[in-house]
Image (tube, rainbow, N blue to C red; front, side):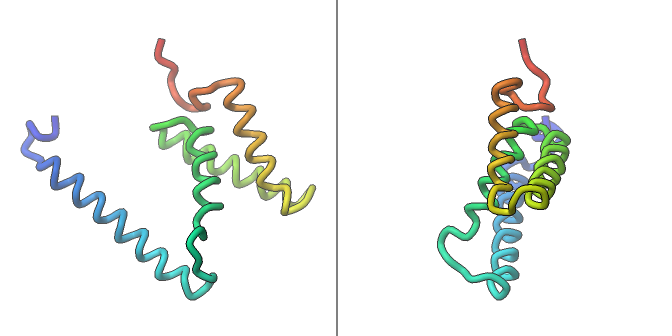
Amino acid sequence: MASALGIPVRLVYTLTFALGCALAAASGVLVAPIFSVYQSMGLAVIVTTFIVVVIGGMGSLLGSILAAIIIGELQTVSSVLVSPTYAKIFSFLALIGVLLIRPQGLFTISKR
C-alpha cells in the first residue's frame, strides 16, 4: 500500500534500521562511562524487555507500554517489601501466570 502511494519502502526500512543502530550506539556510548563495560551487560535489560513484550502481547504497542508499567511497579514494590534480589522472580511469576491464563498476551485480540 505504501509503495502504491510512492513511498520508497526499502529506503524507509533501511533508514529505520540505521536510526535504531545509531540510537543503540549512542546509548552504549553514554552508558559506558557510568557503568563498567563487559560483553553481557545488556542481558538483564533484554530479559526484562522480553517479559514485558510477552505479557503485553506481540505487536501491541499499548500492551507493551501497560505491561512495562505493571512490571516496573511489580519489581519496585517487591524489592521494597521482600528483597531487591528477589524482585526479578516476581516478574517471572507474572510471566508464567499470564502464559498459563492467556498465552497470546494480555492486550492482543485473539484470532479464531
